[in-house]
Image 1 (cartoon, rainbow, N blue to C red):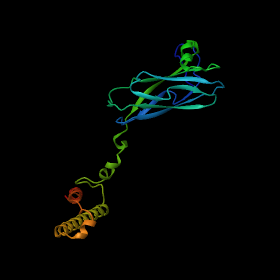
Image 2 (image 1 turned 180 degrees about the vertical axis):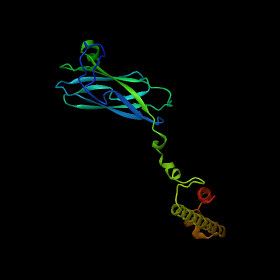
Image 3 (image 1 turned 90 degrees about the vertical axis):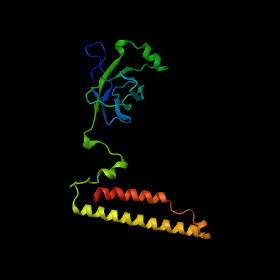
Image 4 (image 1 turned 45 degrees about the horizontal axis):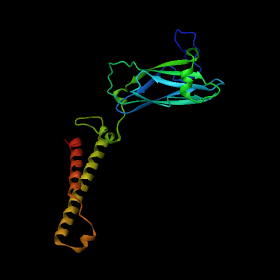
Length: 227
């Protein structure tokens, strides 16, 4: 258990078991909300009221931030760190405190319970916040960039001849598809100019934009693996 109150020995020892007991770790990158969980377990035979406080309330969202825990029960508190610009040279000074008190026999209003609580009856545990920025090779990759991140750059020797040959074959296949689409598009345009009635039931010809996109895609692959 975490000792509460520091040098003030008049306070009771923290009745709850905290997991983690001393610090809350938040793993970056911090471009989105980062959530870490704090488990509060009540090993006693009495109901316990708890409240979670922080020195930086605007930077965190805590759910639930207060409540009661029955004897032998566990409550999981989600601590959500809001996005921010991470500075590795800046040490985190944010702290959390879990304050507890044995619940009175008849709880009618939690706010009144805390207001009427005697200082000596309060128990608290403090946790510091730790920001952990992963190394470069551990950074998560978005699905949209996974395909291109694994492709070799010009002059790269990371892929063997077999893989390179497969990619070249894929480029040729895509190029053939592009030529086929271009021919079909041209044919449909000619049929439309001739005014064939059946074309009205077939809808519009393949948009030229599709051919342009295919050409750009082929150009990208050819630039990567041929040049």
